[in-house]
Length: 120
Image: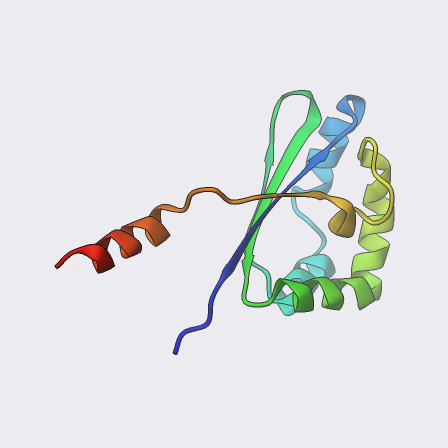
């Protein structure tokens, strides 16, 4: 039996005047924070920057609630998020826990697999 992977996509907005600094802070991210993200169980984590400071993030995990709890309890993650909080517009609380989660409406692999099951 294989584990089900959760795909999580979220959105935040960066203050336009802080975009260059935000990008610099992620080029690269501190090693201790990278290790915490991995230890939390997040994989294939990416951030995408759009016009006007629109930031979209994506990651996969076997247990998002456990990953969130791990990072919520992590002093490393708390320190990183405290440093990063000033970059975001209209955000209350830690960025990792306060981002707007987007609803997945299509995933190619899932639909291809479902289509294959429907065939005789």
